[in-house]
Length: 330
Ligand SMILES: Cc1cc2nc3c(=O)[nH]c(=O)nc-3n(C[C@H](O)[C@H](O)[C@H](O)COP(=O)(O)OP(=O)(O)OC[C@H]3O[C@@H](n4cnc5c(N)ncnc54)[C@H](O)[C@@H]3O)c2cc1C
Image (tube, rainbow, N blue to C red):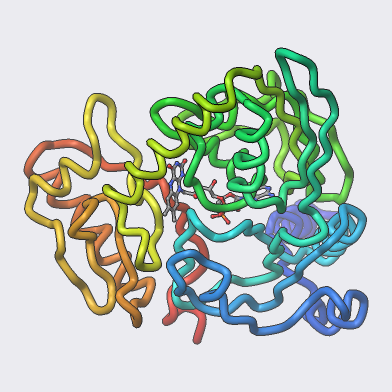
C-alpha cells in the first residue's frame, strides 16, 4: 500500500463514525416496552422546559440498563442520563440519541446494618433523595438533615455531590455501583472518587445504579428538630412554588452568587417566560411559558454583569444539555 492510501485509511479511522442510521428502528424493536421516540422533556425536568428526546428509555433493572448501554456502544449512539432533572437545563432543540431516565424499579432501599451507634443502607440510584433522607432521619442518622429539601434522585445527588454548607452526599457515601459505557457493572469504593464542590469525578464514566451509605446514629428528636429548621429556612428563602432550576451558579470562593446577582440589580428581571427570582437571586423560575433560550439569556446577563461590576466569574452549577432549536432543524 502506498503512503497516500495509508494516510486515507488513517484519516478515515479518525473521523467519528456517528450512529448507525437504523439505530432508532433497531432500538424500538429490541426494547419495545422500555423506549419511546420523540418524548417532550418538559415533564422530566424540574423547571418544566426543554426540547424532545430523540429516544427516551426508562430501564427498571440493572440488566436492562446494561443492555441499553451496550446497544449504544455497539451502534455508536450518544446517550445521557437523567434522574429527576432538578439540576439540568435542556436546550429547546432537545437531546440527541438515547436519554435514560432512572426511577421506578431502580429505587430499592435495603438496610444492611443497624447497630446502636451506626447504620448502613444500600439504595437504588433511582430512589428520590428525599426518601433516603426521611428514612435516615427516622433512624436517627446524624448530619443527614443537612441534605433535607434537595430534590432529585440518589444517582443525581452522588454525581453532583449534592449538599449544603453543613453536609454533602460524599460525607455518607461508602460505595457505589456503576454500569460503564459497554454495559459492565463495577463496584467503586467512595475513596476512589474525587469529590469537589457539586461534582464527583468517577474513575470511569457510566450510569450509577446504586449507592451504599453509612451514618452515625444520634438522638432522633434533635435530628427531627434540625429537619424542621432546614425546612423553614428553605420555605422562607427559596421560590419553591414555581418550577425552577435550584441554584443556577456555584458560589464563588468567599462570595454568594445570589448576593452578587442581587447587588448588580438583576433580582426580578424577566426575559420571555423566565425570571430571576425576587426571593433568591440565584434561582431562575419558569413563569409558565419559558424556553431554555430565555433562561440562557438570563444566565448570560447575570454572568456578564457580575464580571463587569465585581470582576468575578460565575461558574454554572446546573448542567446545560442538548442542542439549540436552530441546529436541531438543520
Ligand atoms: C428547588 C431546588 C433546590 C435545590 N437545592 C439544592 C441544594 O440545596 N444542594 C444541592 O447540591 N443541590 C440542590 N439542587 C439541585 C439538584 O436537586 C441536585 O443537584 C440533585 O442532586 C440532582 O439530582 P437529579 O436526580 O435531579 O439529577 P439530574 O438533574 O437529572 O442530573 C444532574 C446530573 O447528574 C447526572 N446524573 C443523574 N443521574 C445519574 C446517574 N444515575 N448516574 C450518573 N449520572 C447521573 C446527569 O446526567 C446530570 O449531569 C436543588 C434543585 C432544586 C430544583
